[in-house]
Amino acid sequence: MVYGPWHSALALVFLTAALTSWYGAFEYRLDPESVMVRGPLGTVRYGWEEFARCEADGDELRLRFRGRRRPPELVLCAPGIVGQALDYAAGRLRTND
Image 1 (cartoon, one colour):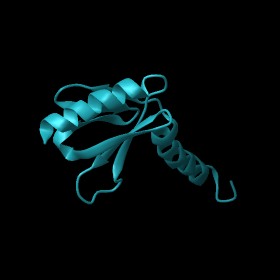
Image 2 (cartoon, rainbow, N blue to C red):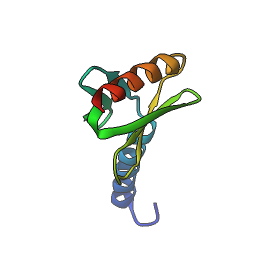
Image 3 (cartoon, rainbow, N blue to C red):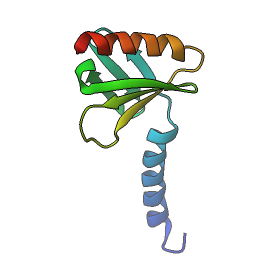
Image 4 (cartoon, rainbow, N blue to C red):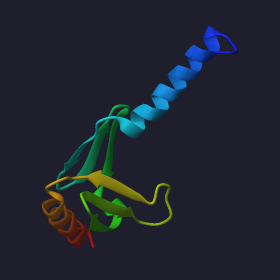
């Protein structure tokens, strides 16, 4: 506010954009070909061949990417169905080896 209303408005726009991807709602869809992640800023598809392994951690399914990558894993929030999601992902990863 010290620098004026334009600087404040611009800072608010950047802050909102940054926090939208962190706090926004995400939808995950696992199908035989890929993992689809739909979020507030767009949709991304990852083929099963891009993942090396998977594991469950509480209500999260963690899919580890092959090779060096940032971020090194894709974390899917699956409260109540993490066991089913883990079984499905593990089956897909076995068929790709």
